[in-house]
Image 1 (cartoon, rainbow, N blue to C red):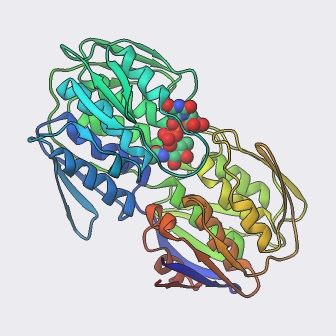
Image 2 (image 1 turned 60 degrees about the vertical axis):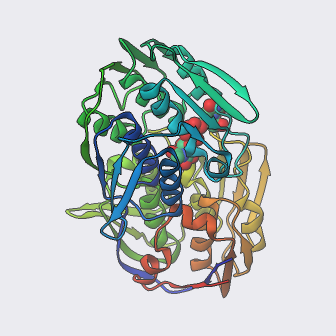
Length: 421
Ligand code: UD1
C-alpha cells in the first residue's frame, strides 16, 4: 500500500488547478441511466471513485469511455441489460446507491446492494428509500439488497425530507424527472453539486425549478435526451488547497476557485487571519502576518461550513493562537483524524460531536494513518507545517478524492513524495 512522505517547513508559492467535483461527477454519471442517448461530461476529475462508478455503470450494460486523460467521460445507456448493482462494487463506495433512482425511473425495477463507504458513522440510506416510496416505488430489503419496483412507472408526489441529505435529494431528483406528474421536494439539499445535477438534467430535457433552494419542483417528462455538461469545480478540493498557504505561509492561487462555492469557509479563514482575494482566474490565498487565530466551527449543510473541510480546518487550528471548538453536526464519529494529530503533538479533546483544540506552538512529524478521505489530506497538510518528516499511510483513501496531490502541492514548493508499497 502506498504512503505519502512529507517534509515540513518552507513557504508555498504558485498556482494549483482545481479539478471538477468528485461528488458532482458521482451523481452526474448515473444520470446517463435516465436516457438512451449519450451523455458527455467534461471537466471530470481523475479519481479512483470515478473508476468505481465507471465499473458499476459498465456492470449494468452502460458504455463508459474516457478521453483527454480522463477529463472527458462519454457515457451511453442505450443497452442496459442488467438492473442489479452487486455488493462487490457497491461496498467500495456509498455513492453507488445513486443508480437506484435512475434505474427505477427508466426501467420500473432495480436491485441495488446496500452500500459501504467511508467509516464515518452509520450512514443509512433510509431517506433515499422513503423518497422513492413517495414516488410510488415498492421496496423490499432482502439479503442485503434493496429490491425496488414501480409497476406502471413512478408517479410524481410530495417528498418531505426529515433531514437534509445530499444523496437522497440527488436520487429523488433524478427519479422524479421521469415520474408521471409533478414532484415537490421539501427540505431538499442546496449543495452546488445538486445545482450542477439539475442543470445537467435540464440540458437532457428535464423540467426542474428551485434547485439551490430548499424546495425543488420537478415536472416529469416521458423521455430524456443526450447532453454535454461540464462538471462544477470541486469546492472541497478548492478549500483544501486554499488551506495549504495558511499552514505553511506564502501565497497560492487556486485556479477555477469561486467564492460562492466556499462562502462560509472563507468567513472562517478571514477570522483565522488568512486573506482570500478574487482574481480573474480564481482565488488567491495568503496568510496574514502572525499566528493563525483560533476560531469555532460548526459543520452544517450548504451554505454552512462543510463537514468535508472539518478535518483540514482542525489540522490548521492545532497550531492556532488560542482554543477552538469544532462541532460536527453532519456525521457522528468524524473525528478519527484527532488521535493522529495528537500523535503529531496536537492538544485535542473529543467529547461526542465536539472537539476542543488548544493551539500548540508547532506540530512534529510522525508516522500517521489515514482513516478516511478528508482525514488523510488533513494529515498531509499538518505534515507540511510540522517539524521533520511525516509519513501518511493507507493513502488509498486519498486517491478516492484527490488527483495528483503530490504534483499539485509539489509545484508550489512543498516537499512531498509518494512511496510505493
Ligand atoms: C454527501 C457527500 C459527502 C458529504 C456529505 C455531506 C457525495 C458522494 N458525498 O454524502 O462527501 O460529506 O454529502 O455534505 O456526494 N442520512 C440518513 N439517511 C439517509 C441518508 C443520509 O440518516 O438515507 C444522514 C447521514 O448519516 C448524515 C446526514 O444524513 O448524518 C447527511 O448525509 P448525506 O447528505 O446524505 O451525505 P451523502 O449524500 O452520503
